Each structure stands twice: as C-alpha cells, then as structure tokens.
Image 1: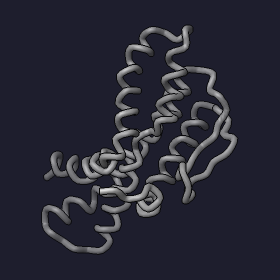
Image 2: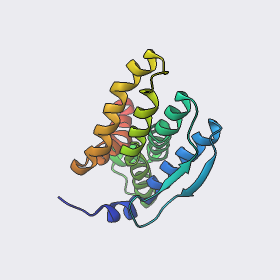
Image 3: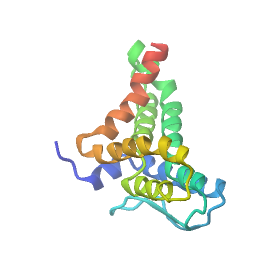
Image 4: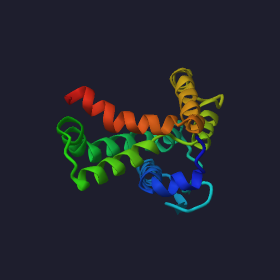
Length: 173
C-alpha cells in the first residue's frame, strides 16, 4: 500500500522532531557546531540538522547514530505505561491511545537516513581510521541502509511497532 511520505510525516511528526533533536543533541555532545536546524517541514526531507564537518570518527558515529538510540528509548518509555493496560486488560482510555501513537511515531523515526549512513561510511573508510572502527562499523552501516531504504516496505513502522508493542509485551506480558 502506497501512502505519500509527506502524509506519513504529518501523522508521525513527533518522531521527525525527536529525530532531529537527537542529531542536534549529539552535535552539542560531540562539540560539533550546528549551522542550521529544521525540526519539521512538509517537504523532503521532513527535518534536518546541518552541522560542521566532524573532525573525529567517533563524532560522526555519535551524530549519525544518535536518533537510533534516542528515538528507540524515548518511544519505548512514552508508550510503555499505556501498552500493558491496553493489550493485557483491554482498557480503552484515550490517553493510552495517545501515548501509544506518540511512542510509535517517535520509535518509527529511529533509523538514521541514508545520508547519515553515507556520512558515517565516508568518515570510517578514510585511510587514517583504525581498522577496528572499520570492522565494527561496516556491518552497522549496512543495517542503517537497510533500515532507511526499508521504509518503502514499512520496515520503519514494523520497527516502531516492535519497540512499542512487541518489546514490552515480551518483557512484561
């Protein structure tokens, strides 16, 4: 089923915003200057953070992977109090459904973009970078590409549902 990207972005806009905040947060953490930020817009890309070129490989990794960790954890935490009552006890409190939607929309935008993956790849594959970084990062970048490109087959939505519904159900259900 095809749904335009701009419509998905509108419905899941909190996830786009948290994704960009995560990039910006890790720029500040890595002491990389942020030049421009757009937390949400109705064009492609739905949001972005433009920053100076990181000098160190670890800075690239932190900035590029930041949304994977921040969105996953934030989405899970927000939805968690609503998932078990809703799915275990069948409650129909509207606040629970809002928390589930919010957690899902945030978790759904966990995957770094193909641009993020490309940036990490170029940083890690420079000749002066330690071979250990290359060995660890190469398969990770492959997974990032799969995650980013997998959105056409709803991989991002499946991931969001897994974080918000499957994980708490498996752990505490």
